[in-house]
Amino acid sequence: MKKLLQGMVLIAVITVLILTGCSNPGDTKKEDIKEDTPVTFISLTADDSSVFTTEDGSSAVITTKLTLTFDKDITDLNTTDIQLGSSTGTSKGNLTRTGTGIYELAVTGITNNGDVHVSISKPGYNITSTGYNKYGATKIVTVYCIPLLTAGVAKNVKGEVKQWFKYTATADKQYLCIAFGGGNLNTRMSTNVYLYNSNSTKLENAKGHSFNNGSNYYNLTLTSGQEYYVMVSQQGCRDGYDDKSVIMFDAVPSLFAYELTANTWISISLVNWNSYTEWYWFTATGSTQFLHIKDTQHGIGIEVYYPNGTYIEFNPDFSLTLTKGQKYYLQIYSYTNVSCKIAFNESSTPP
Image (cartoon, rainbow, N blue to C red; front, top):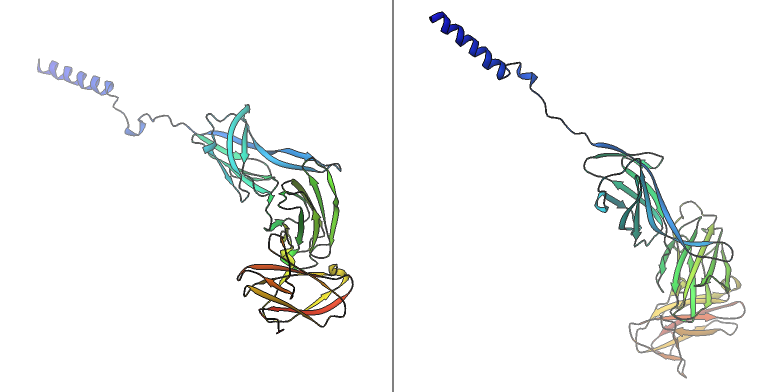
């Protein structure tokens, strides 16, 4: 009987071991691990819309959306999964799926032409890119805008390209200024400037004004409040000066005005290369200012302006009634070669 009981216990132990899966601890069943879905970022393109096309076939364009193409759909892809990196001011708008693996991203706020780095990151997906402009899940694309010009504010111009700008005239008389290489002369072989009104008509007084081998300004007759488009085309950029040119509309050509200091004579040379004209600026040291001229062989003209281009009349004694501390501009001109000296102070007696 005792042996029978021992046999029954042995059978029970074996049964328990089988039912409990007595085996090597290393053979325990592992949970399934889900791998990230591989996705290829195939292409990135910028879709540009033409603002207008000129009579000579040039187009002013702006970028309105980016098209991102993958080899398959990315479930629930949204704008938070897309990062934009650039100094162009580009902002993300709505994202729309337009086909299998194809998404359109609206973009706004572009203030400068340039490259945008577009990166994609989505949990559950292993995204890689293809092509020459790849870097992980990042691609690069160039976006375009028409930068707005503000009167009296210089804007950079890129070398060796056609670049468009938009400007709303603040007065009927305006100066268009081009300064090369941060103000240095002879840094471009040639720069052509074309001016169009908002219906794409090229203006007669700005049909390809050429600034050759030097900075310059151009006197324009516009309509205050009217929108204009400016196309700048540069050739012959010299090493080290690319992107250092600037363009500016102004009521006076302030980029080319030299400073006058009270009680200090300055020599002036009016010759053909500067169109027999020079511009200067000074800060009034008092409410009454006198201008003094000496050592001139021919007659010259002198006009004084507020920074907004408003003309200031001289008093009968050749003095000016001004505001102390205010900045003023002085235009000196002639119709032939002239050399002279000029100074200003608060007295009728020259310095």
